[in-house]
Picture 1 (cartoon, rainbow, N blue to C red):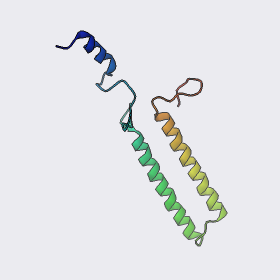
Picture 2 (tube, one colour):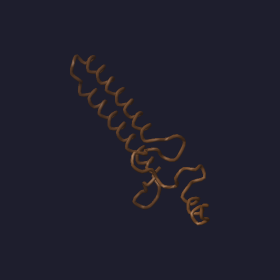
Picture 3 (cartoon, helix red, strand yellow):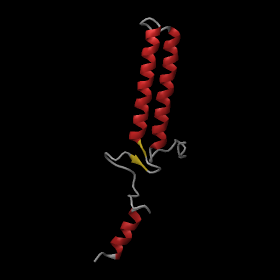
Picture 4 (cartoon, rainbow, N blue to C red):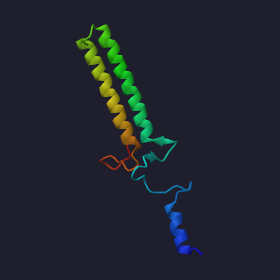
Length: 106
């Protein structure tokens, strides 16, 4: 028979859907929410990176084998935006993240 104290303690450690109330640990990269995971973010980032790399190849070919300064600057801006988006999405997905003032990231 399970002790009422143990049953009560277990109830506090479980969320209403039966999953652990604690943040993910180890290899568990899933985050509470609508089927959201860091793996999904990474997959999306990798797809966008490959698309940017493909665009760079197309521009390089159209420029005769060497990128023009304008195309290089254009690609650099797109890369910076992509990295910023990915970084910000990772920050928002961290269940333990807080801003310096204690507020939650947006």
